[in-house]
Length: 167
Image (tube, rainbow, N blue to C red):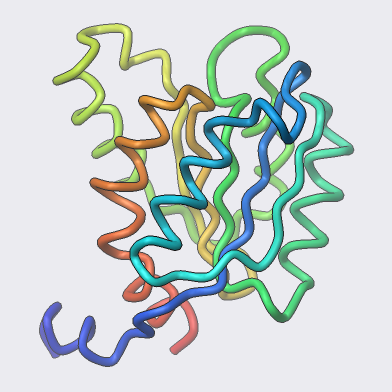
């Protein structure tokens, strides 16, 4: 079965959750979280839940566990905390949940990002994996990075990835 046949069997609409990781953002100024929601809902997907947590390993893990256990959530997008600063602990927090890594996501994100920002793209630790049949994307918190990740990588393959992860 080829890619096109797989995509034809994939859900056209996915229920997703957004987890914003930030020590400074609140709902009113969570522009990156709003962009994720705007881009995915305009493509026909549905927001199931949204949460903002601090750059704290336990808080991130609890929110991610809640999303994974929520039967209304099919995919999760985590934004923020993917850099190299001491406060950036998203990947350390989520490593516990990784069942199947999707290294191509991070590789492609950094390649596309390099075209826009140059060698600074190497500092991004954007990644993706599957946990209990749910794709989890960890992307930078900048609005520009969110737009890049969602429009070029996440949205075009979201239904396909959900289908593949559950067959």
